[in-house]
Image (cartoon, rainbow, N blue to C red; front, side, top):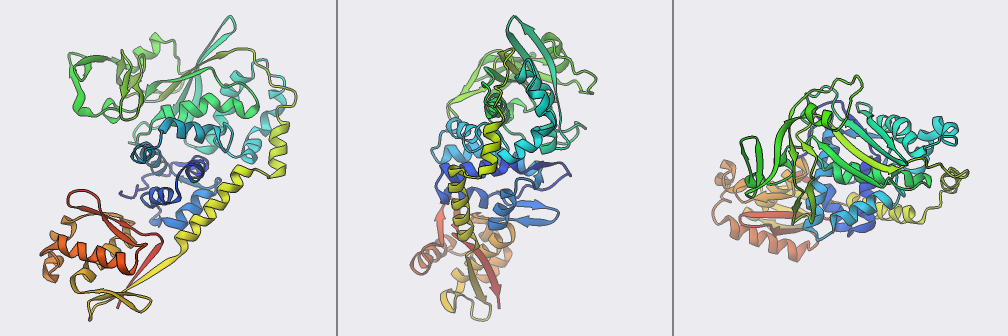
Amino acid sequence: MKTPQTKSDMKIRNDTLRLLYATMLRELPRESVKKFWQEHPLSDGGVVLKDAELLKHIWQENKFSDIYYVFTVLNDVEPFLIAGGVDTQGFVDTFVNGLNKGAMVSVSSLLRFLAPFLRVLFHADDVRYFCLKNVLPPILQKMMPSLLCAVVKHEKRLNQNTSVFMLCMDRTFQKKLPYYDPDLYMARPLQYAPTRLGLPAFESVSTISDPRPLDAVIDGRHIVRRGGNVYLKGKLCGSATTFFSFCAKNGISFNGHQIPDRQVIEITADCTCPRRNRTVLHKGSVYGAPVHLYRLRYRANIKPSEQFISPLIHESLSGNDEAWQQVHDRHARLLGDLERKIVFVYNSSGEAVSINGRCLMKSAPALILKQILHQHVVNGKTEFANSDFTADSKGRRAGITDNFSLRLQRLSAALSEKLPEFRIVRAGRGRFKLHAPSRVELKVE
């Protein structure tokens, strides 16, 4: 995977990344966790953070990471889980409701964020609506300073509330941010956020406006546009409209916020993805929109208990959370794995690769290994194509392009015999992967 590049000063606090990493440590095999983060080095300000340095950075929740990196990571989680046979929705539910019990931030950070509102919270007649309107926006803006968020619709009928909450990641509407699935990483956390305060979850939260175009959600080869309508595998699934028309129809007002109009696709029938095993296009929602909109439906007039803050204070003061302690231990063990270093030495005159003074291989296999290690050390690369080497003029001059597949097999066999934890394995036709259990250093003499 290519390293996501920093394209702006838009940053997000590490709370979400840290919780994602911690949930992986808790739910997935350590080798799988290591593999995922090794494939996601962070490039920031010309410095590439990878392996142990990357995980140390993510572990600090009060540090910030580039928004392009965070959204790229979130978007890559579901394919990674599916490839590993892990149920995405079950993992996300654990991510939301597990270690932080419904919050995206730690208990100590949550108490700091809540401090200005505590007196009013005790007396709010409808505490969930009060939090949605007055507490959540400043908390989210502390996590992502460039964020614009607000309640843009609220109505109460009998004892039922309907609110629409807006999130705008880019106030200029000019940056092309990576897409991520808002159903997984915003709607679910938003629904369960009240539970961290001992309140009932919002009864229903749905994404009704999604900036992703349809072909970022569904394979574009199955989508046909004809006469203002959109067909998926031959069946009508949506029609073109404008974002402002959609908002007017749903009674949504942006209260002075300068939101641009765009052509959007309004979905007329739910569409389910068999591979993801869930609905991915929702009836009544629009795609290609300028902002995220979430509709919340919930009972009105819920008040907090008189002692709602006490469990949070006790948890913060005790510092005795067994689940987090287990994750801390697993984090430390993974850092130990990554900080262990294997030093490979390539001797140019003898055309040989050695470790700890022991020769691993010579001639063409040694040169192939040297080139693989160079790409891995410099770019964090772990997956290669045979053509990376056979199309290289230097490779032709060095004589490694002839019978490359056979030479690669011999290299793999030599590693299996002399350094079994360090492997080269086939990854499909004309492709192979490098499995490096620890940090690698390459010296050329």
